[in-house]
Amino acid sequence: MKRKEKTKKVGTFRRDFIYTALALIAVGVMFVVLPEKSTKLICYITAGLLCVWGIIKLMMYIRSDINEAFGSFGLVTSVSLIIGGIAIFVRPEFFAGVIATIFGCIMIVDGVLKVQYAIDLSRVGAKFWWLILSMAAVFIAAGLIVVFNPFSAVVTFMVFAGIALIIDGISDLITAFYISRVLKKIANTEKRIDLNEDDYKDID
Picture 1: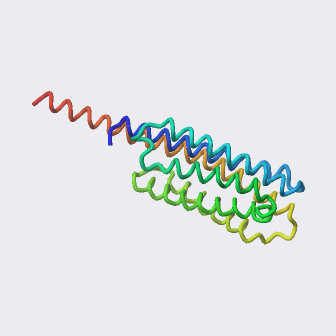
Picture 2 (picture 1 turned 30 degrees about the horizontal axis):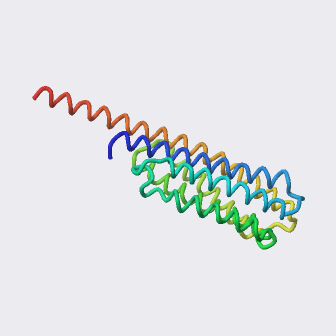
Picture 3 (picture 1 turned 30 degrees about the vertical axis):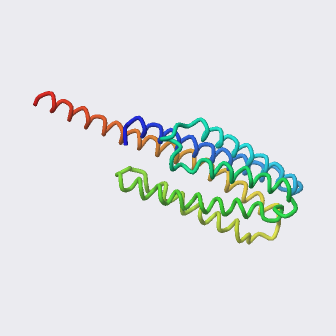
């Protein structure tokens, strides 16, 4: 893979991760600020966020070149988000009881992805891979708590889910910038190696 293509992939990864993090933070703030409000209202706001998120990802997919778009699942992801948002708009009463549980599942999936990132960082010798792994374990546990809901009060449950989503989103931002930094460092190392090889060719 050429360095230019690698740079594009790093930029796409960071951009997608940041959008995901901001969406999680927005939903988390909504859960904390509106724990006693109608769950139907929360469903409408969540549906709107999903649709906007899906449209943004769809525009990013359309504007990306073939090398960046190929294998990115950008179209599938964006359409799924839009369909999910429309489904919640149409049947808010159905999703009202499970909206926090859905985001608990998202936290679990996000935690599993962080496990993979931690393993990949460990393989390339990144210094703080264990920190990403620790965050992954915490958010998988938090996601499980949200899914199984041990709280007796709805307000307590919504506030806990909201705080967990906010912290998860912040951790995603930290993860995105750290992984981008590691990938850039690897790219610069490869660039120096290529330059050295060119120097040897000139000597020959």
